[in-house]
Length: 600
Image (tube, rainbow, N blue to C red):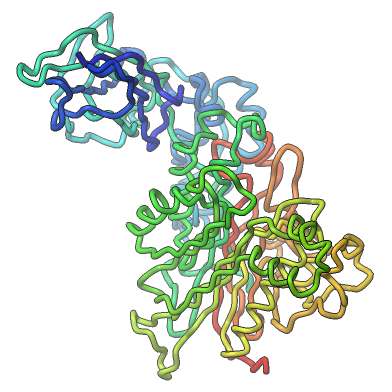
């Protein structure tokens, strides 16, 4: 007979919005074991599995700490209540927790106050919104019987019959009848119970032991600090709903999302295991990406299976069409489904797809080796150059009022390059060669048409490095120290390390802003390069590796997504964290098309 051998949950802590998928090990009548489901529609030997989920609600109400969501709250900031900041952000587990968090917590109060002062309206932010009618910071004890109204999503009609059981002061509400369950806001602070039992297909009665699991208390999904879109001309707020218009404005996002394959507990052991799990991170990343509402999205480290099974279908629901280029697998020897790559999405109502180019640096390495490397060194050269990195180049056509032409009947084309350059610190020559190869490919496209260009991605190169110099300055100084590493002589003659594209880093625009309101943004730039102080933060490294470059003869930066400060991230040691689900931060820029001066 069918029987259940073992049941367990991969994640100990359930989080709102993150699906719970129990592991159920079965023994079939033929004595084989399997994790395959046996639904009522396809019974095995006259039996099937029945699942139920319950919310265990006790008389004791529990609030959750906003800083340590797995801990019960004992304190509440009344200043948050007064300012009408979401109550979930007002709770803390200890006085030390509140004290340590105060410097960052007071920003919520300041923003609530500033939002009220701006024409008496709420301040719209790219990632989150705070309602405000005042400010203040008062610390008070939180009673164990405090109302949990702020933790619910209102009176919702139950999806299932109440099926309530009373037991030792607890009430069990049935909330689901499928194998998986996604906690809602109504579950916050409560324990969930999962039941699994073998059922006779004919009598519909349970057979044998009922297997149960109790979870920890459900916690809310941590909400990241809102990041605002900052106009770089000092002329006020940008209309977030204005995208591709007759004047040609649009937004582009670039984000290395940290592949599941790379997010190991050993490497990121400072991040709670539940926050490092892909089940949690994918939902948090999607929520962040969608809330930015970018017209074009360039993602790096997207696994092949995650593109097909998650990002493509989920972003499709939000009006995006996606193109993908997986890394090659001449070096990688694992599961090909988990190889990561570059994904570029665009809003279907803003753009149409014209052409796609795939750049495989392995192929370029083969060609280079065949043409320039002596036979005796070919194997050594390929071992150094073949690293599976790729780039995805997409030519898009802008739609104005959902039409493919502007007011003058001229097509508005845009070329978007998305890449992830090799990570190895010891291969400075390979990094530079990959960037140079990509730029030469883009020059060929530019030669065929005067087309605005964006070059986005994780270049694994800090400001001042040779790859950055080539991108930003159009050339590399022959005396640059990075050029000292060139065992294959692939960077010679040095005079070839140039390109003619008028590329400028979007975030350098912050350095050109004036006014007191921009001081904090300029402080988050490196004074020498005018690039962000960091886009990648781990325990062992902090620095800028990600960029959005644009052709300055055809595009103008209108606004930029504000940068984060290191101190706010260090409260969780580094990235990723419960709030931010990658070890990189997202970059976003709004551009306006301008008259294109011929590059020929």
